[in-house]
Amino acid sequence: MFDFKPDATDSKPEFYRALVQAAEALTAGEPDAVANMANVAALLGDWMDDCNWAGFYRMVEGELVLGPFAGRPACIRIPVGVGVCGAAAQGKTQLVEDVHAFPGHIACDARSQSELVVPVMRDGDVVAVIDLDSPSLARFDAADRDGIEALADMLSSRI
Image (cartoon, rainbow, N blue to C red; front, top):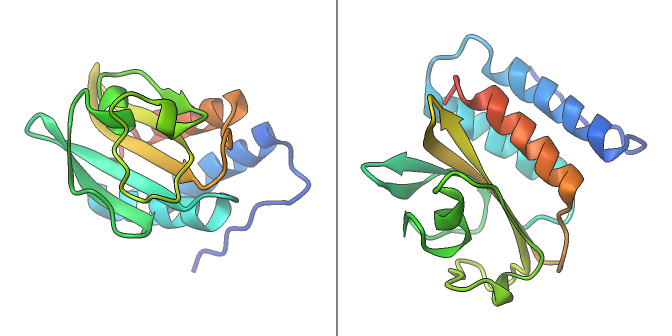
């Protein structure tokens, strides 16, 4: 049984080091990508404050397809290059303070105000994106970006 809990006194870098360590423990030795994404999505949903959606979109035949997540029902398919997730699927992290100012934003949950989407890369290709949404404007910052990018790097061989 796993009972991971973040320390409320941790700085953001310490928080994300602990998150990556917990995700490593949950995915170690498990070859099933969906199982690993499901556990990490649950971990993100449990640990991330002020988030209304946390999870994955998988790259399937040239488009993003909904993967495991924690949150309300979401869009199932997103074309590469469309919306925040589609932009990240082109290989570059998207840190968006106000999703309503993002050209082509796809509103899966009208409560979302800000978003962080990080591509998971393997051998130079995007295999998935990690998507975090918040009902608060400017919820995510560079420390969040760096932490989720570290998580994506660790997961690249496990999903």
